[in-house]
Image (tube, rainbow, N blue to C red; front, top):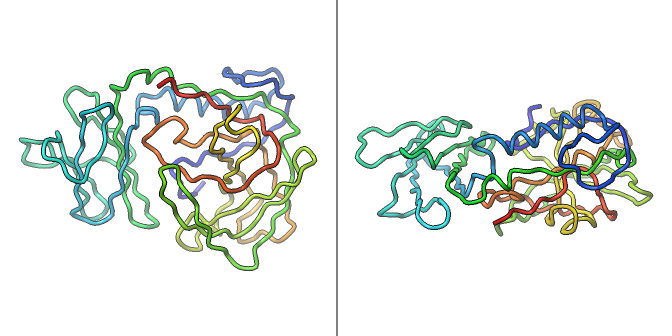
Length: 305
């Protein structure tokens, strides 16, 4: 898929059994193979050396020549705009290239995009970067492998698959795109355009979910999938308190969808945002409320520290 979201995960559709509660093994008898593969794929990401639990901070860079410093003192590694005693600096140059400046080293080292790179000799601190081509920003992450309990929080728990949480919804274009201010988990906000609604029924309750333009132009209309943000009555009890994400695929490109077209939504593929496992991320806070307890998809395994 061509979605311009670094954490967008491909949705796969399937059917099977009723929920019995969180199942960390994701091997429930009768659950669809595609869904089991999806849960394993998510779980595997938590077991990789540079998974999100190791990320303690991030920062955005946009203007060439902009420089920040990495402070590795204290309880976690973090970026600062000014620092005299920090062990290294990071700068953004032309063509969205990021360079690492080490003390006593004449020439800076370029940081590859989307590839965690060791930045200090003890291999306990890594950096990675992602270029948002739609607005030109570069997001730099610091991975701090010295955190205590980092292995404990690399778990993802899932409810058993339940076919009653797969519904058919109807596409409805808004008369015109609506600017919506989306709050983020770090207290910031971003204005996005709501362009359409997906309307259906879940457990005999009406459901209305917003479709946003995640791009900065009309390129989203060529997509065949999108990410939904929603909350439900299970949040803070069995699932992550701030809500979850859900990816849906369309039968054709967005620009070809007409009012009333059917779109499958499978809540069994709901997953936690990255800020659920790492303080290094901030996430959009869902505004849409599903007025039911959606005990499928990813449950919430609270961090141990």
